[in-house]
Length: 454
Image (cartoon, rainbow, N blue to C red; front, side, top):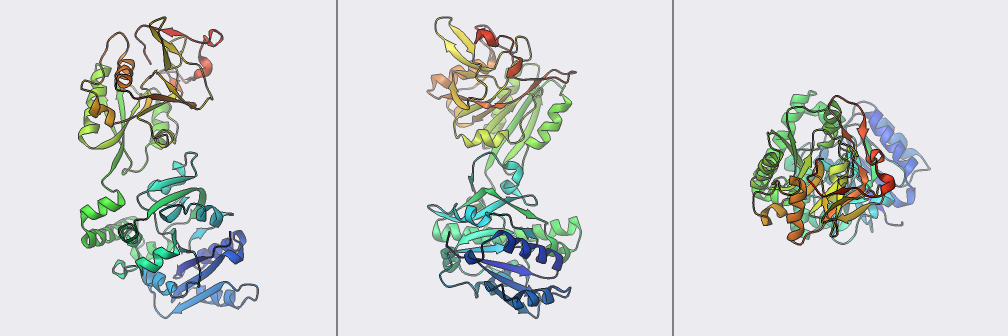
């Protein structure tokens, strides 16, 4: 990689974080591929002396430092740094001074700029939305409606055409959202998350103090900046470009009032930001009625997906997003029934036996099947719009397999991720049942031509 990245870093006090940040940058990045521009806003804690000493070092040549006699804040600081962008630079990185760089960050993020991608962000620990590292699901790149400005890389042409950061956002906050709207509107470019890169973020060290130094004052500050954004663009435009109005997954948990403690421990890590998931719990005497009620809520409220999750499962932490990444109408994890012989709840239809047969195939990845249980299953709500209500009802088989029949009749394929093992548990017991507990493994398959219970 020979493309130069201009890194614009804005500082105001917090010397220890600035020093750690810059040290990690030079330790983990080849000097010929970046140009560091530091804009200091009248720091008084020794940061100025540190930066002057850094500039005086003979072994550092890829550095420009701008000293201001006032605190410019984030927006004005970035704009001041733009005046020092290198000639011929290909990328521009907005960078907080309270982050730590990791090896190969530059090569991996630059590698994400394909097609119409105009902005790339990493994963992190202290961040809102999908960029949290806990959402990692095995894919290297993920589309995103917006990115957070703490460590945000743009193509140079985006900066050249979109121009300066809007200084009405003052010391910072929602400015990157505004910039991304402008990029999408003016250039038609999109954002992606580089899931191969993790950048540790100590988190709002400068802005926290400026906003008042308390959780409430910081939240109030963020709300004010969001109001500025919406007053500038209007709610419709903000929602259109940043995806705020898009509801993704309704996690549906039909139950009878008894829930295993292992479920609750796992479930709290399964649910992610409110912009991408929500949860609704309904008790019902009939499982098909509960499922139908939950589906109706999801369709009426504009959710893209329904995730059925039984209350006696141990859901995998990033299971939702792995299932979403397959981009198929219906896909389940791999789990077994609680009752013996603990048959796998992924099935093929046997025409000779005129019934469903369990598939024992752990570790074989994503495969098409004829039916799945609903204990951990993601369904695109478009199916519910094409299939007449009631979607779930009992017949020859249980409500889950009857629904799968309807899906196949509409011409859609059903999938199971045989790598995603989802343990099943008995209330009052600790053992987690998995495909290893299937008692008929030597027989290969278990015939299930009557009603099945998961």
